Length: 462
Image 1 (cartoon, rainbow, N blue to C red):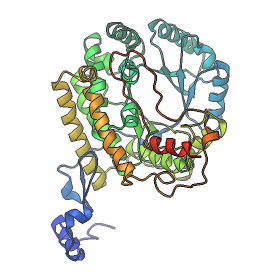
Image 2 (cartoon, rainbow, N blue to C red):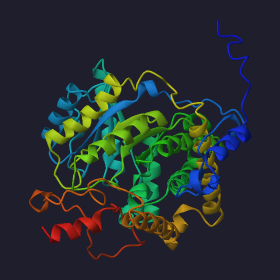
Image 3 (cartoon, helix red, strand yellow):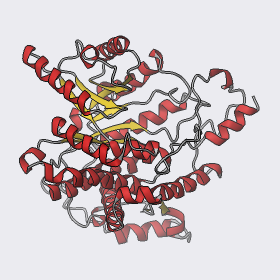
């Protein structure tokens, strides 16, 4: 029916479109009026067509129909955390992420009645003995039940170094334990949320995540044969900001980059991406606006091909975990999946000229930066020298200036603030960068929100 339907229409080249636009501008400069440059040094044009694609892009292996809603739970009390996880599953969550603070936590009790539910375990300590006992229990448990436990153990020693400035123990001890743990779990995690929340631009986020992963690949390469490495589950945990189309392209570029790096080590080229909204643009004043920000960020995550999405409660910056805001965060994802039908198409962003162009440019720029990092000694060496920290600070300072001058807008904070909005008596958590002197091996990478300085001034005058 549609064969030849558009034959009577002449094709229009990019040059013809530009000439038409230039005519309609009535003498205004095309470049100055319509082209803007991102913090990643990407020039964004007013239109894109097939001429912007050097080659026809390959379809990625994303399965957007299978993305899962995740509930993150910090385990302060095993019994309460278990009940909370079960209730979250009953109310729409499809996977659980437990953050385990110490070795006193009983995984057996924590996972009671959670068989067959995907569970991610993030440990704030490093213990091969604890992991060994956990694996032994899981094997024994799965032999007794029909519905098997579905546990993924997430180990990231470099992420801990970057965040705290110290190894768990020492570099040699940490890597020895890391290798021992990966032999048992066949998995590890790259926590790239830190880079985004500290102010790195998207090219830096991608390059640092890849260089971070490369350190692990170098460490374990000779310890496993190719067949075993193909069974590995590598997880990238990323933060997603409010630059909607760029964030979609960022996640797509991450898969492209991993697909480029992984074959060099003969490791599984299918990575698992867990996404969560950024903290960087969240505010304590006019806090309901955080719901709008996190909704579009979760939309970007789905369209970009994230496998698992953990939403951020709107009041997470200043309030302790509470039932209401966690329910709201979960419901945002339920609405996207079941009422907005964000689970009906596997590759919704494929073929969009703008997104394909952004994906290509971000991947190319990130690969160039990654190669530069490796040529200068690798990620750990540049962390030790402070190069990574300095580059992130430069990007963060630029973004902060854009916020301070009003170029970057956070509604209710630096644009249309509500003068009657009072928050001093609402703060259950300290919402700003905490400073206390301690000895560290390297300068830690510090997360900081854009609105912090402005919010501190407002609090003083309440």
